[in-house]
Length: 70
Image (cartoon, rainbow, N blue to C red; front, side):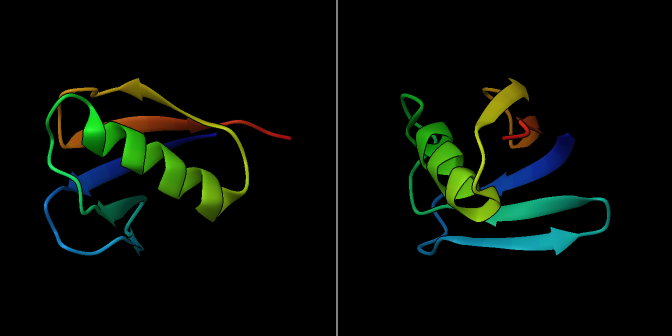
């Protein structure tokens, strides 16, 4: 399943909220050296309890993420 994600780095909190057809994810990490992407993947894997991979938008706030079936 592919989902749209809008990332808000440097938020001071970790939170996932549903917004329309996608999700908004607030991250504590700064978007430097892939730190925010690592935090995003860990948070989404805990949320969905499945393997998650960023398909597009590695250097963008808007991403397409694939959630794999178990």
